[in-house]
Length: 135
Image (cartoon, rainbow, N blue to C red; front, top):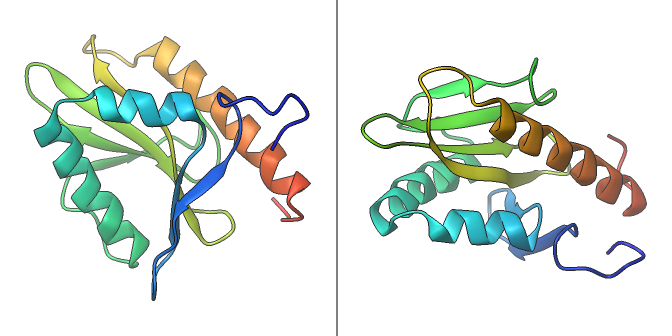
């Protein structure tokens, strides 16, 4: 946990998985964002995140966000009206970590959402370093 012991910036590993990677939200805010998505969207993203935990490819389309968010950041995509996105990273500490989930509001890249995900990636790396991981 960070020095402030706040809920909004601390990595908390939530679901250890036998035979797969651990799962976590990067923060309580990231978890709330995910849980604020419609239940069917949560279920669809959840199935793909579980597949990723076990080393399988997701069923939904994905996009690398290495250039805009950081190395290893991936975006799960649900297109439609509205469209939804879930940004995660599975590169560090044998974990799948959700950085940001949101409703896509533009046909272009959502700059604000990418900035949020980038900042959370920095927070994740900071927390992992404090836990003794090399990132």
